[in-house]
Image (cartoon, rainbow, N blue to C red; front, top):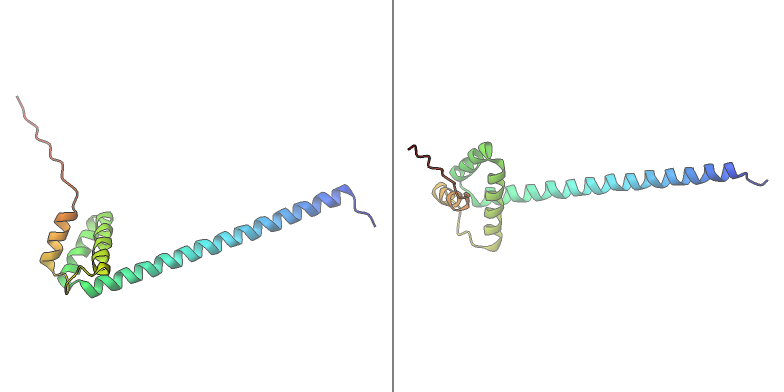
Length: 116
C-alpha cells in the first residue's frame, strides 16, 4: 500500500510533536537538576555559617536578613568565601560581625538641604 501525501504530512507532524515533547521533558529535567544543585549549595553555605559563626553573630545576621535580604546574602557569601580560604580564625563573634557588616555596607549618600 502506498501512503498518500496527507498520511505523510500527518506522520511528519506526529514526529515533530514527539520531538517537541521530548525536548520539553529534557528541559524540565535540566531545571530540576539546577534546582537541586542550588539547594545543595545553600545547605553547604548554611553548614559553613553554623560552623564559623557564634550564636550572637548568627542572630545579628538573621536580623539583617529580615530587613535587607540582598545585603544579608552578600554578607553570607563573603563569610563563606573567607571560611573557604582559611582566613577565619576560630569563630566570628557578634562584634566581628558588626565590623564586617560596616565594611560591606554600601556607602550612605547623605543630602544636606539648606534653606536660604
